[in-house]
Length: 165
Image 1: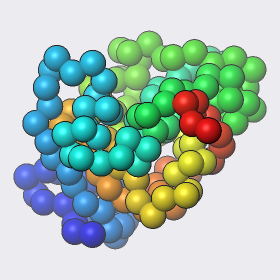
Image 2 (image 1 turned 60 degrees about the horizontal axis):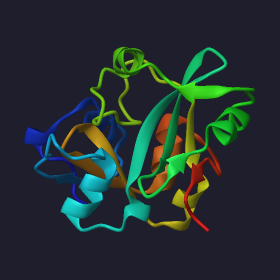
Image 3 (image 1 turned 90 degrees about the vertical axis):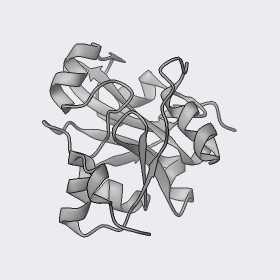
Image 4 (image 1 turned 135 degrees about the vertical axis):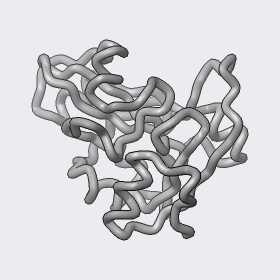
C-alpha cells in the first residue's frame, strides 16, 4: 500500500504516517445529496460495502465512545454498550461528536481524533486483510490493515454490527 499524498493530509493520515503504518488513500467526489456517506464511498470506489466501515459516535452511560461497523449494516446499540461494560447506549449528539473528534459528520475518522474515545471495532473486520474507514473528511477513505486500526486506537473488537448472517 502507498503512503499518503501531501495534498490529502488530515489528522488521520498524519497519525498513520507518524506511526509508520502502510495505508492507501481513496479520494472520491462526495455528492452532498447522498443519503449515506459510507454507502456512497463503497459505490463510488467500487468496493464491497462489507469492507467499508463507518465511524459512529455514541453515548454509553454518559461517556462518548466510537463504534466502527460495516456500512452495509447498522450499529447494535445494546451490543455496543455491552462491549464497553455499559448498560445503555444512544447515538451521540452530532455537535458533541464534532467537538470531541475535530471532524465533521460524514468525515469522522476513528484515527487522529482531537480527543480519543474508547473504540469498538466490529469483529467482522478481523476476517478481512484490509478495511476502509473515513480519512477525516467527506470524500476521503483510508484503506489499512484492521489490526493496525486496533493497535493505533486501542480498540476492542466485538459483534456490534447488524445486517449480516
